[in-house]
Image 1 (cartoon, helix red, strand yellow):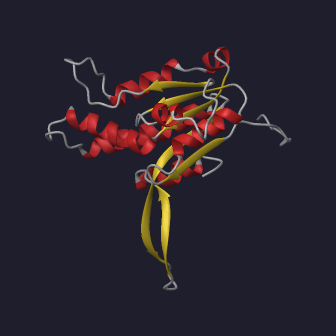
Image 2 (tube, one colour):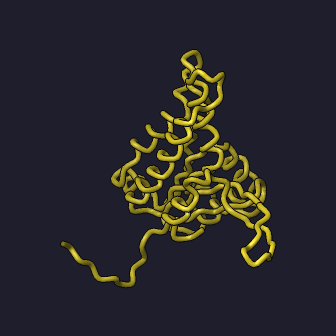
Length: 201
C-alpha cells in the first residue's frame, strides 16, 4: 500500500463550464488560455472556437491556442469521414502526456460535449439498421465513451476544461417549493458521474 500526504501544490484542475449557446463558453476558453501558462489545445466539436476568438475584443492574444477539429459527421467512405465515434477515440489515442509536454500544452479544452454526444449518437445511428436513429446500445456506447474519455484525460497531468450547453428545468422540492434547475446538457445517466469527476462545475 502506498500512502500519500496531502500537501499544498499547484495541481492541474478539471472544469466543466456550461451555459446557454452564445453566452460565452468559447470566449471563456480563450480567456483561460490567455491567462494560463503554456499553450491550450482545443478539441473543437461544434466549430465555434475559431470564429469566436478571431473576432478579438474580449480575448486579445490567441497565439497560444491550438485547435484540432473533431470529425462531427457520420461515417462515410465516399467522403472519407471516419465518423465521430472513431475520430474521437483516435484523437485521444494520439495525445499523450509526453506529446503535451513536447508542445508545452498545459490546458486541453473540449468544446463542447453536448454536441459531441449528439454527433456520436448520430454517427452510430447512421451505421445501424434504424434509418439513422440510434439504437439503445448506441446510447450506452456514447455514455461509456464520454465518462472513460474524461478519466483518460485526467491522467494527462494538465488542466482539462469541458464545455456544455445548459438545460433549464422546473423543479419541485419535496416541501412544495418550486424553482428552476440549471444543469449541463449531458445524458442524465452519466450527468452525476461527469460532474463528480470535475473539480469545478
